[in-house]
Each structure stands twice: as C-alpha cells, then as structure tokens.
Amino acid sequence: MAILRQSADSILETIRMIDEEYLDIRTVTMGISLLDCADSDIDRACEKIHAKLTDKARDLVATARNISREYGIPIVNTRIAVTPISLLLSVSGGDPVKYAMAMDRAAHDLGINFIGGFFGPGAEGHDGR
Image (cartoon, rainbow, N blue to C red; front, side):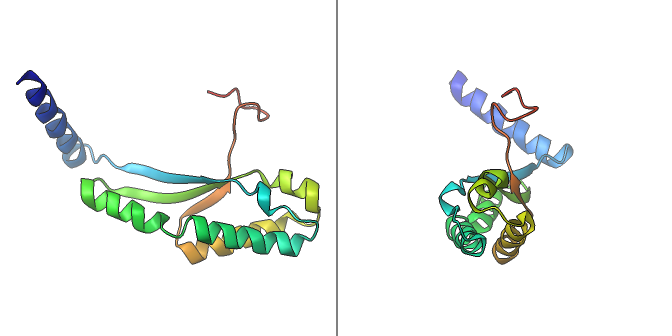
C-alpha cells in the first residue's frame, strides 16, 4: 500500500510541476554517427549525409509529439547531434560549408529545430562530465 501511495504522490507532483511550474522537456536529441558517410568526393559525402539523416531520423519529430501527447509534457525542440564534421573533412577535405548545407537541408526536410556536432569525453575543452 505504501508503494502505491508513493507512486500516486509522484504522479501528482509531476502534474503540479507541469501546471504550476510550466515543466517541459526542453529538447529531445538523437545522436547519429556520420563517420560512414566519409568519401573522397565531398559532394558524394554530402549526399550520404543527407540520406542517412533523413532515413535514421525520419520519425524523430512524430515520436517526440507522440511522447508529448501521451505524457502531457510539452517537448519544446527536436535536435540531431552528429559526428564532428572535422573528422569527415580529414577524409574528403573541401569546404565545410557544404556539409553544413547538407545537414541544414536534412533538418528542414525532417522538420527538426537544431542539428550540429556533439562533444564527448576527450574532446578539447570537455572533461567528460
């Protein structure tokens, strides 16, 4: 009986936070590695990037909306975090703006709010916490 009471209290506290403190989930992020998109031809690499992003994240926005509806908690943004483009530039070289344009096109096609690189342990200026 104590466990049921504890669960009920937790649910009521969450509802209170949503109603009174405007609780929301700021961002749902999907991480996608682009390392397998590297190519000696930057235009081919950009096409691979667009194809991979639009394939892997095709349900991201709809899934976030469904979760938001199911639990009644607003999800403000959807985001894709990708491999740092500098790693792909080491294979294909060329203009990094081309990569940015391919990712921007994918973000537009998917209807997501943000797309960009991620930091991980060992990245310059990041201690892994």
